[in-house]
Image (tube, rainbow over the protein chains, first blue to last red):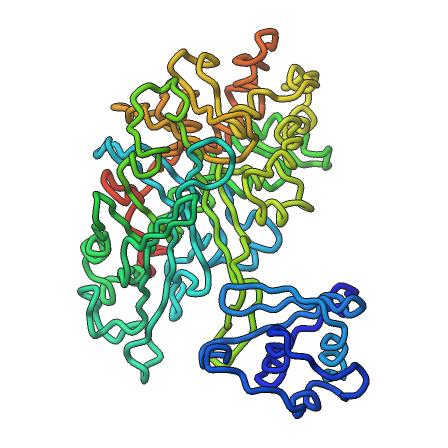
Length: 97
Length: 459
């Protein structure tokens, strides 16, 4: 059970967009300033280009593997990308509380 | 079973559960090799209205290692998709299905075939190939054999493929084997765990899989399609004449339930694997079976102890006290089983020109010597029956792999590698008692027989 509680799966358009923004290197605000992903989504960030945007049939799934290190695994298409970002990991978890 | 429901996780995912793998030089086309991977164990023929089908979200693969390192050099990939053509009906079909494009057939499945080489080069060999329907009954699927025959698809360069329901060809007495090994032919010798007033009598075996179906992916390709450099082996003793074969099923790592099913995302992760029959079933501890299914053959040295010191060999003299004393006293590693299952048998061990050896890398692969011609009078007992073209040189649909492997574990092949070993006298009686008599088989591709009809079974 500890393994399960350590991991958070989510999949929704707003969250996906927020995670995608981090994955492409766009800075999010400092941890603690935003209450969660919904708040982060309102932060002024450049629009995704047409090439970057999720296709209609495309999903992005994020798995917070370890909040203490900010390890997040991102699944999209047939790819898996691992990032380390404690801020976004914290926001993702907070958004679910 | 051969690999039916052999591990805890895959037993809950039947469409991805590999059940049997066959590989043999085609008896009617000896310049080709036939590879058959079966999935979906224990299909009850009448199991409608949602009859059995492949998983659209499962990547099915048949791999060939032709340089002995336990990694694939040639892979055939199969991807399926399904369509409903009559959105208003709850039925699989609304009338007789007389052809693969019958307007009466609601639920259809198609697939693509892609050949991938070790360097990552991928070539799509076929696309939009139709599967036949399941064999439902005389009204729904009249003349089923012709219907399925139309689903045998000829690709370019001499390759042929078929994917769909077939009659189960694996035979085994599960009820006896999993009842603490009370093999019916020698049940009278079993210790019966000293249960009071219980006596077992010797009896013929029972085929627990009789009249059941599976889903098969069968591909027949020129031998040169799977060898290193595309050469045609002619000398069985030559390195490179033998290849290793296994099948896998994989799903994308992340799955999210949507309104109409699962959405898969991310890279494919392997959840089922099968090379030699019964390997994961009998030789890998229950606690490691899921890990084995997710591992490549190249890492099988991690599981080699179960081959060198098989648990079942130690149990035989306990279950049948006094009948396997030589086996019980043997404490050395089982070099015979390591050769048969993990490296292949080097030339000279059994005969100068008999070899399935692929190299020193320990990897569970079904090894096939492509320079050994098909037998004119094949023996279901394979090498134990003096037939060098049968298991463990590949595996044909007739091979009695349960008895061959039971007798091998009981020590019948040990004298090949240890001349000092004397076989126990009871070894010839070690069998589940099934012979495969009455199986539904074909003499041509795809060799597995017409599936049992849901109307006719159970009779």
